[in-house]
Length: 77
View 1 (spheres, rainbow, N blue to C red):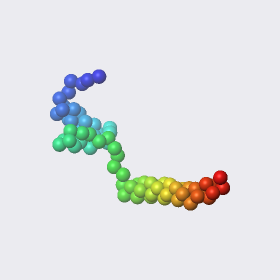
View 2: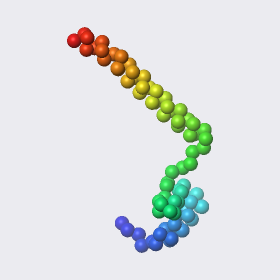
View 3: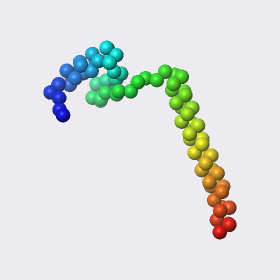
View 4: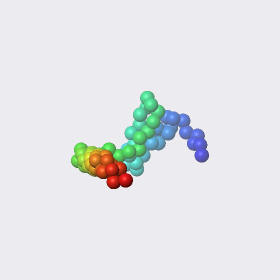
């Protein structure tokens, strides 16, 4: 489905919806893009990073465990 809006009309409608708090968006005019992502506060950002870091450390621990276990499993064969 194509809309018959010009880019200026689309930006105006989008801006009106953002001002009315109907949606959250950030318009990047030079790029010609719109980002529909909510902004996280500093606590949410830190919690997200901590969670991701914990996942990475778990993966590192599992891979280290597998790499140290591998020689033993081949010697038993």
